[in-house]
Length: 169
Image 1 (tube, rainbow, N blue to C red):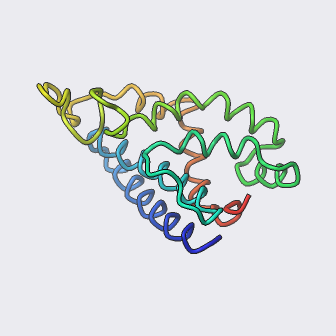
Image 2 (image 1 turned 120 degrees about the vertical axis):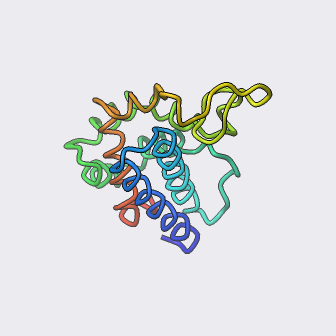
């Protein structure tokens, strides 16, 4: 892991701690969702800094991060599967394909990517707001708190906790 990766990883860990704290206190969905989206953005940036070249300045990156992990070199596949608690790398790849739409939806709650749609930070639509984020029931939150969504949150936690083990893959 290089110094740039460590900076982003440390921030992702901090954001994840805040996410876990918020989630345990059951605040409005918008607060937990905001921090979870930031965790995924920052762990992706930490990963993409492995080349020591800045990744694009964007809130998007989590889906691309998942795709990269699903296409790593043959020699590292067994290790990646084990890190993320899969018996075989092919099981990991199949799981990734299944959760990519949910990951895409999570990525798209960032205000910059949500456009005029629901986001955890600002009332919308911008010109004539009629919904505060704290009052909104985010469909992605319902997805994340059941079934494969829980598995995706488990994956995110492992991605943060064990980042040094795969940072250079």
